[in-house]
Image (cartoon, rainbow, N blue to C red; front, side, top):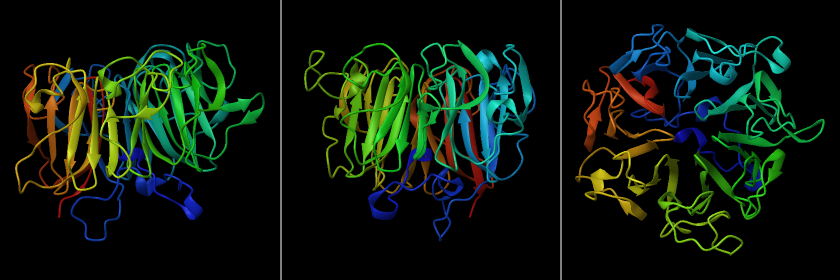
Length: 414
C-alpha cells in the first residue's frame, strides 16, 4: 500500500504525501519518479464501482475507467470509488450509502459516472487534496495541502472527528481537536470501520472514533486525540479494529483486536502487552527493513529487498500460498522463485484478495476470486498460488482494493 509510504522530511519530520507519492515510483522508469496515470477497474460492479461508467454486474479482467488521465491516487470503498487527480481535486462514484459520495445527498442512490466531491460545508468543490482514505461505508477522510483533515459519511462511531452526534454527513467538514479547533499538521490518514488515524508531520499518530489502541476501550473519542506509544511512525494500515504502524526503523507495531492479525502474543487488558496498546509484531523489530504494510483478515509486510511476509486469519485464503490450511500467528515469509521481478508494493486493505506490484509493472494476485477480483479472466475459484496479472502496454503503478472491487493506476510500460 504505497499510498501511505511517507518519507522523512526536514529535521526528522514526515514530509507531506503529495501527488507524487500516491503510488510510489513508476515501475521501469530510470528516474524512479512517480507519475499520475490511467485508471483501470475490475471485480464486482453492481453499483458502478469499477469506474467503467456502467453497472455491468462484474468484470473478470481490468477495464479502462472513464476517469480522466492524470490520476494520482485511487481508493476503493467496496461499493464506491475515489480518485485524487494530480490537480488536487477528488472524484467519487458508485453507491451513496451513508452519504459516501460526498455530494450533499444522504439518499442511498447509485451514480456510475465520477463527479467532484463537494467542498467544505457543502460549498463548491473540494480542492487541495493530498491524500484520501475510505473503509467500506464508514467515514471517508482526506488530508488537505494545509495539513488539515476533512471527513464525511458515517458517524455512528464518531468517525467524523468534529464532535458531531449526527449519524451521517453528506459533505466534508474539518476534523477537530476541540470545539472550533481544526486538527493541523497531518500528512496522511487511514480510515477504519470504527476509527480513523492521522499520521502527523512529527511522526506521531492522532485518532478519533471508537479507538482501540489507547489501552482504555472507554468508548468513542469525538475529537482527534494523540495515541500514546507511537513515535517516528511512517505508515498506518487499518482493517476492522486492528491497526498496524510502521516505524522509521523498520519495526511494525500492532493493536486494536484479539486475533491472529496482531501478529504477536498479547496479555490481559491494561497489561504492557495488551492487544489494545501498540506493541511490536513478532520478528518485525528495528532493522527488519519493512517498507510497506497492508491488512485485511490477513496482514502483509514488504521489505526493501522485495521479500513478503504474511500472517493472520486465513478465512479468505490469503495465507494459502504459505502451504498452511489455517491461521498464521506470526509473520512468515512467502518464498518466491529466484529471478522473479522484485515486489515493490503490496495491497490487501479490507480485501479478500492480495495484490503485489512488481518492478516490471506486472502484478501477482492470490486469495478469493468469487467476483473476478483477481482480474485473470476467471471467477468463483480461489487463487491459491500467486498468479501474474498484466495489462498489455501498461505497467501497474499501484492498486487499491476493498471487499470485491479493485482499482489500479497504470503508466505506459517501458
